[in-house]
Image (cartoon, rainbow, N blue to C red; front, side):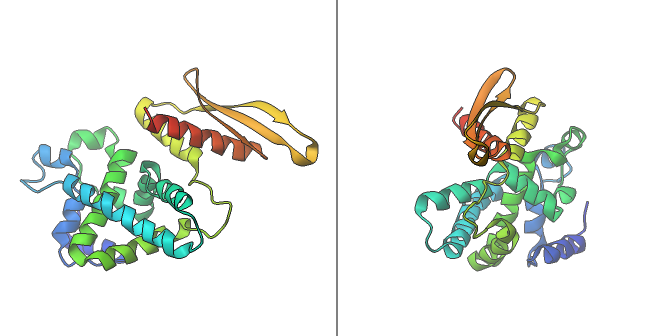
Length: 232
């Protein structure tokens, strides 16, 4: 278990120094740690995750709003959804080293909890909730702007945060198996091809995508599959 001094040092590298290290420790505490008695009555991070979810929507929304002054509401919403989904937040947690600091119960740790996207994403949201309580709205907006800057692009061909990776992580977590992609059509002259790709999982077609390259078509199919999963 990291000491308060180690946690403060990590948070400084992250871009924010906590006045109250216990808020940071709570953000890193999974309910399994408390349930097994390791927390000695310490609160876990579910309430902070609830707050952080709302804070994150605001922070990323403001970042996109300021970075893209001419963008319409629908596209802003699409980009925000891509940046705050479970798969991307889990990658953010790993990128910052948050996964190594998580306090997990022994059973959860032994079952690979430190690498579960749902646990990582919840902890990342809890972290933002803790920053909000510790430093206020401006602190969390500034930290989110720094952390999400690499993914907030001015390019017109913004890709929804690698939908193939997001879909694979969701299916691996739920079913322990990755999807497959199949080229079903290739149309048009050599200089203007159109590719149609389907993504399949356990014999079921989950989504279809059409684009000028196989790679783009696979991403489009994965995005369609993610929407299908979200509606189930």
